[in-house]
Image 1 (tube, rainbow, N blue to C red):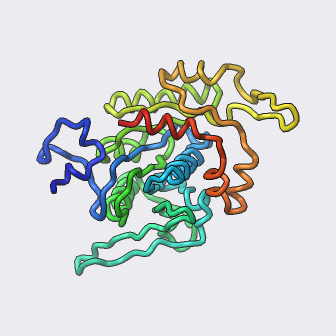
Image 2: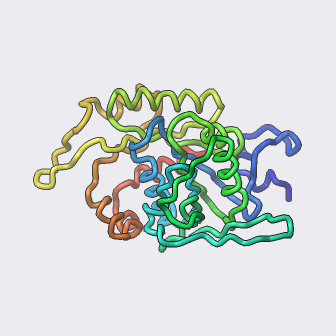
Image 3: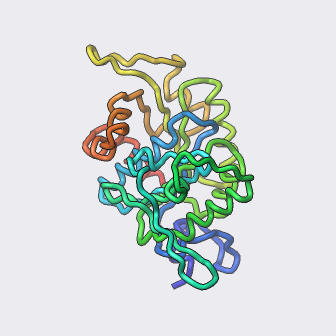
Length: 281
């Protein structure tokens, strides 16, 4: 079996194995690799990653999450596994290692720098090449097993890590996360253009924090721009995958370590799941 057989981009790739520059995982096979990204921080990119992971797992898929935001990792906190640490196994005399990801209560495999450092508050003070190198090692040297989906929570912006993932990982596509503000949409547009110039499939956009729903009457109250989510998606030139409200119950479930049960048992976010599966290659 060639490396191409384990590549998530094989269906759309015209290269032969000798021409391929993609990094593939050493331990296991991954059918679909999806990046979740945005132009700036604070828009809920990690939350969307976590929601998608839980929904995919609840639908019967084998799921992993790579926390690609090396300097600001948050996926362990989302899943309530921040008190755990990934095992590191030395596999030969040349100091090569293999990472064993931490599994969530739902069985989602997660690897993050915060699962490899002694304390989660320990800062990473590295320059770009070091960050990109560690990210590639976390991806290639983790014991993923056989996954249907690997979701990569990417750092905001168009810097080194985003460029590395787009150029060297066999991405099937990216999901863009935005919020309903013109300034945010303008910055997010930069990421969309970057993906298009890198010939990366943009699956669609999730508008997070679109509104607050009144608990008494059910009215949708727009906190930011009065423009509709469809208008914002049209500006970005993307399909709208989901319009997500500010959800205090979701936040409370994360703080109580019950986020997977909350998302898995909720009928919310089903459109997001269906759209992702339908629009990924």
